[in-house]
Length: 268
Image (tube, rainbow, N blue to C red; front, side, top):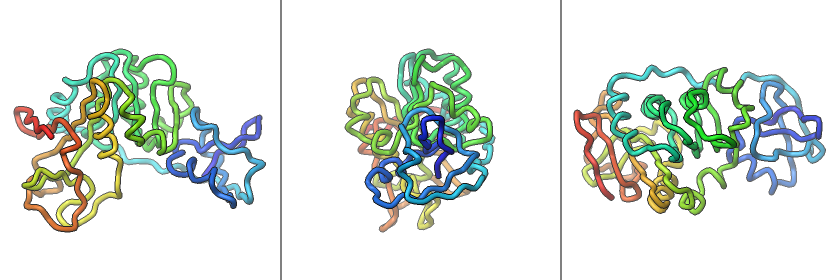
């Protein structure tokens, strides 16, 4: 899906360069959905309209993520995680109430930068708080949120880039003071975090949390952390290991925060 061409004849991948921007340049046949609702965003150069093999135009609303209320438990966990985010840090988070709780507690910081695969409404709010550095301070691979976030996607502080840039551990390792904060739903007795499955049921597709954790661990002054509720969807967070279930090993991370009265660090 592309935006309509601009005055120079270039179409933008809009709020989701993701994998498409990397694959597109290697494809011989290029068929595009031109969506007038897709904004032309700063960052990836996009595709010249003249290089399309075929195209069709149809307006389609962008996928909107439902607004999630941030509860007290999420704020409690976030209060521990933000202690490791000082002025001038670069932050990676995912989507959901825990990442949004963290971002909402950073409005008093200054000269922050964002480097993340997924940007939600929390990034949009941080954009207006004055906490981000000048220039292209929010490098993201995909924006998923409400209408306001999509309206702000053309802000010059955004830098939309493909997965080869956002999730590359070698590039992440070059970012000083990179702090990654991601969620897991449960932890087994071997210390493995379940980021994509709960028990034997998958609840999401593969993500880039382990890429970001490895990058943060290698970065100068970096810190990788996981956040976990004691209970997710009514189930206890700790469980016996289950063969064949997707896991994210904590060996790639540095700290883990539980929804307890005190932070419990786990060192990999």
